[in-house]
Length: 330
Image (tube, rainbow, N blue to C red; front, side, top):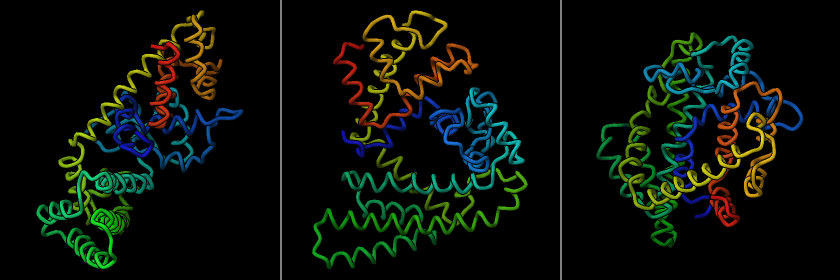
């Protein structure tokens, strides 16, 4: 499996074992260091906008959008509070630009999986168009995207393309047109709801309040029905599950099997554990071993493994597991 094959499905399996939003906040503020503890040293406004769910893990509330998940671990709680103090925000209150960032994510994820599946031959444009026309026959946004895509499809037919090339370029243009329509709709929704966002009372997803809501919803529904249950996708998810569990078992053994239980950086109990521990990013080990790290030892151990697991690409994770097993790590 190459880096681009089923990447999102594989990473989705990894995200299910940690909270991606909180890990992103930790990565930017804590892990990307050279000689200080400020991460990438981003501005307070940037970090505030990054926090889709400005809430700690013990105050998650599925009924409230800003608390549906959590956006920071206790190890970064002080940083989150500092960000709110400097921006005039507070726990549970989103920065207005967060809604734009969320809409960008929503738009991209609603369409890229469909296009990726088409490239792999799992679906085609006619199947997608038929689904959208049947389910959203009275929706103006859907109609405009389909009409334009069909017009472009006819134009491409005159270019002596193969059937696969024709479907591929048609899907590419559908993606471009659909994203364009959703961006315009999101922009309009943002302008209309900005006063409520500024007041901290807007508690809905931007796309769900936009004119492109039906298009956005049906694209996700199409993927859920016709892409994610496909055998090839499930095979990738299974490979991800096996790889992640295999690596976690090996890293946990290397992290915990050391001479001094209270010193996470102390000598490992075997050459294999020493080698595995050395494969963990130096930045991540430095943060875990730092005397300034005030978190309990078990918390630091778990975070060190989480940091390493979440920082790997799919292809690197697979090759690393193979390397570690060849060297006797189990």
